[in-house]
Amino acid sequence: MEQWVTAAGILSLQASLSLAAELPDAVTQADFANPDAISVLLGHDLFFDPILSGNRNISCATCHHPALGSGDGMSLSLGEGGIGLGPDRVVDPDNVPLARIARNAPPLYNLGATEFTTLFYDGRVDVDNAAPFGIRMPDPFYLDRPVPSPLAAQAMLPITSHDEMAGQPGENPVSDALKAGRIHGPDGAWQLLVNRLEAIPEYRRRFDWIIGTGTPIHITDVGSAIAAYISYDFRTTDSPFDDFLRGEDSALSNQEMRGLSLFYGKGGCATCHSGTFQTDHEFHAIGVPQFGPGKGHGPGYADHGRAAVTGDMADSYKFRTPSLRNVTLTAPYGHNGAYARLEDMVRHHLDPLTMLAEYTADYALLHDVELTRSDTEALEDFDEVLRLGMAVELEPVAMSDDEVGAILDFLSTLEDPIARTGRLGAPTSVPSGLPLDPFQTGDGKPPVTGSGY
Image (cartoon, rainbow, N blue to C red; front, side):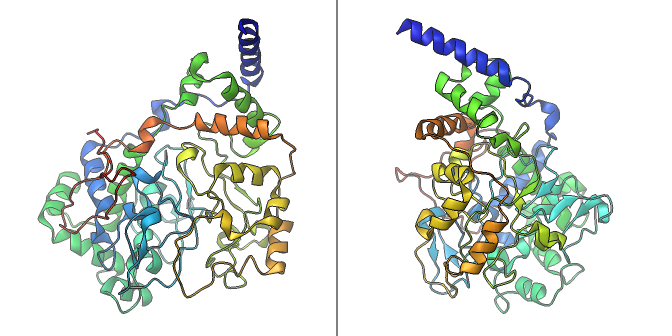
């Protein structure tokens, strides 16, 4: 037994030495901006406060909760018109949503790192020197003031989505403004939301500390504060893998080292999941099965991904490579949460065409509700499935069950313990006085409140 352990240790060392040239550098403070405490705490309350939704009934945290892997634990969210959090979210009988959200709520981990310059699954927010203030936004939501990062620009968009946070036309002035195309200006949707914050003394006082006493609050100030909170609370850079990159050879077990070797070697995973945060920030077509309402590209339920932004049909079905940090916490997986289990997502990468051909919605994790549009129309359309399969870029890789298990063990080393709660946790109240989303942990208790600023 002792000889086997010694031999395994030697193999582990050999693997680490052979992969040294391919492994990313360890994270440093220089990889992140350093948000100030006042902005972080203000953004914390704004992130959890339903005041930024059209009907004052949903917050950013509803779909990006720290206790749910910075998502909502479902394949496709129930946004405006739902009640509750995560798998327990149900339809409000007085405000039935029109459809599920077309894409999975993406994780927020480490988005404050300076290398994250492209956001959303299709990259519709991106650093672009030719765009107003250097950040390209989807039309007509252009920037009319500078923001400190693409993350701050991104934070301004979910509040303008009818299905996500704004509500449907006829329900409130914000949704009506959006329907009429009024985004900017004194009667625009963004200003209507800002006016609500101006009317709350505590928010006005805290913005005074940041932008100056009496300076009118602008929507970019709101996005910047929310981005500061996300940058702080969802920074997770103390995983076992981080310890290993910092030189602690014992941080990974022999089985985890075997998985690391397969990930960066035979599996070819690092071809796309490269770099410090296991993403090349590029767009790839891997044939993730399409279901749910889609984005209305082509057939009503299709989702052409990057092509809808670039206008180049060669980009059809391509989506941004996600970071794998804390991937054990961020289920379901894929741009639409097609796979509830991480193992199934790994197996899809190894043989995408077979998984696509055999896929059913049973692989996903959906709220059991009746909605106006079928979840499975795309799966039942042979031509659409064929188009999706023809776009696949990945070549199949043969792996044993033991090798798949080793990769899963390695992926578990990307989890930072702080990711399970966040540093600040959920607040007990917010300045608007509106009720927070009800959420209980598995033992029936509220989520643990973190500590930080």
